[in-house]
Amino acid sequence: MKVFSENTNIGLRHLRAALTVMEEGSFSRAAQRLGVVPSALTETIRMLEVECGTAIFDRKTRPVRATEAGQSFLEGARDLLDRFELSLANLRQLGGLKRGRVSIGAAPSAVLTPLSHAITNFRASYPDIDLVIHDDVAERLASMVVNRTLDFALAGPGFESAELEGRKISEDPFGLACHKDHELACLTRPVLLDDINPESLIALDAQAGIARMLADCPDLPPRLRFGRIQTFSTIAQLTLISRNAGVALLPQQAAKVIQSEEIVFRRIADFRLIRSLYLLTRSRSSPSPAAQRFISSLLKSFPTQEVQ
Image 1 (cartoon, rainbow, N blue to C red):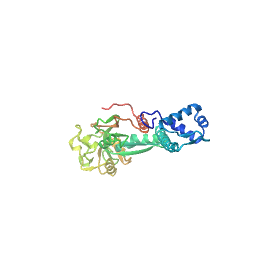
Image 2: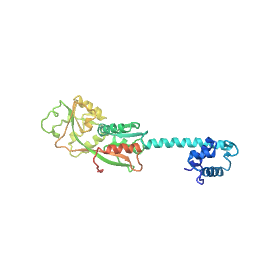
Image 3: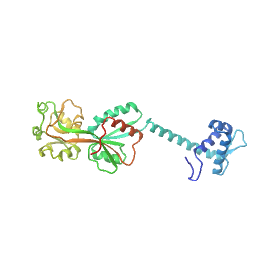
Image 4: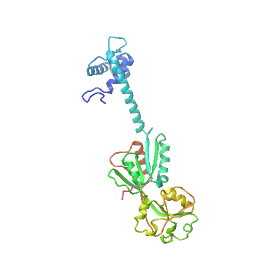
């Protein structure tokens, strides 16, 4: 490491040598402490003094003392070395996962599965790493990954950027979420689209990814693409369902978000719509060591899949 100009050969080795001589008051004791022969230490100090254009030590005194100019120089050298050692120690802690933070974005339905399991496992192995979870819609999560607010995100489709890499890690089939006492929950045969009363539908706001998937699905009758009741979050939607206020078309994992025993998920025999979950990372930079370790642990739970 060079600490002056690009044309100097002086580095941290020279600064450490000079500071050790000052602390020991002797070239021979300093050489012994540094594990070098005295002649090598003397040459190191000579090179430093030539570069500085002045003597750093008064060799006539016993013990050896710094000159006035040398004293000022060594005070600055001590500060430089202290800051370097602190930076190095911090870097080693980050690389060794002894400190740091991972900022994770997730669709609300991804927090329960798979994120919660990965967090539990990661915290058990790396308790000194802080984790920040930001749940939001796919478009905003993608933007936050690009601008480095998030290290990575777990989100559904909706991202379009050359700055992002998306890896599909799971698929989540749509079905019907209803109260356990609802007539469709008690139906002994498979549920069909014709069984669903459009007047009972609770829908998400049109800007939500789930709502857009339903609106764009050619296999879904128009009467079932919207609802008389609209909410701005899956949590509000499911809370109403848990009170038997209506039913909703949702991905299976999304239907589990509030983990209510009052809510039943039923597959729909004549309807197939899949919401994919993607791991979003920046395409032109690598995550931090802690984020890389978290992602590696997370992906062990999923088979390798390509983005489609």
